[in-house]
Image (cartoon, rainbow, N blue to C red):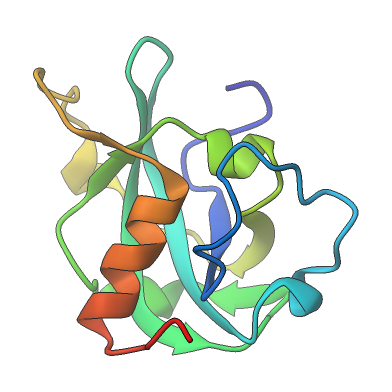
Amino acid sequence: MRNVSEKDVYAIPLGILDVSDATSMSKMKPQNISSSFAYCAVVRKEDSIGLQIIISSEIDGWKNSVDKRIFDHLLMEPLVTSGLAIQKKRWRRVDCQGEICISSYNEKISTPVTVWRGSQIEKKIMKLVDINND
């Protein structure tokens, strides 16, 4: 994925599981996509595998910027995603105040690995935080 770097932070919309992962959402404003967002940070990028991300336990409305401290408490173990949700603007990049420490994720992604689609990660988050998709 070009234009994606380690330590980039993305807002993950919750509640749009009826929209295909392949659908471009580039023309929609993030706040019109969903009212609830989780936030993730890219901790490892391997072009042949995907992006390893950590997901903050903080669920909130749309924010243009988040503080690095939201990654002090994670919702789950790191996951690997293909990055299609980022490419299709389903997940939007947000600014991060302060630098996220990713030194504990310096190891290569070991294979075989499960590569999750954006909507699968969204569904997993919603289940963990008990948000219903009505």
